[in-house]
Image (cartoon, rainbow, N blue to C red; front, side, top):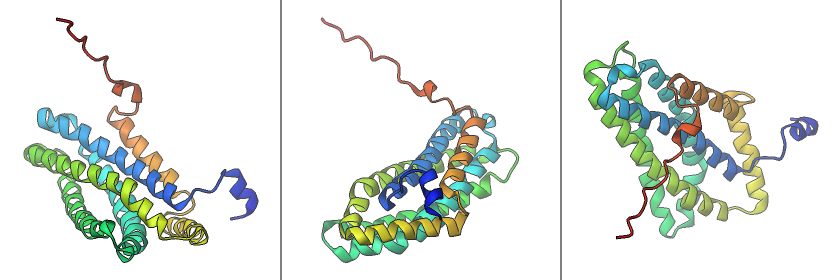
Length: 212
């Protein structure tokens, strides 16, 4: 990438910032799953299977095959384990959760191949709820414990090298605009399910506290 092109795109994204914004895409996928699970419990026919199919395929390509396998499992978890201490107990659990997530993603992709969810609706809703609960805890621990611990294992020069390496891996996997394309995909899925307008999620005011 030429310096001019780099300047056009703004300041360089650091490796840790890259990891956390990738989590942002995956969290938006989890929000889609939560909204879908709620409707599946009460009105399965209101959820188009292809929207869940697209979400699962995005989670697979961007989350499991790229973010987890190519970055976390290849570089971050081994460095954190080698550094030792209490944080070194996390990677094995996180890999177990990655593997369970892949099983559930397989299930979601298979179930949503059908034109209607029908008899599978309740089981699918439970699987989505369990997946979301696992990954909300998983990503929060990575953001607040694993990524900071990994950053501490690197010198400034090594971190700079990892910035470039992660960018190269992303381009190799997805071409020039991997993150931007993933954001477009999840945005389109949100729009198809009526979830795009963030204003609808503004909390109502809290109830008045009784003075008696």
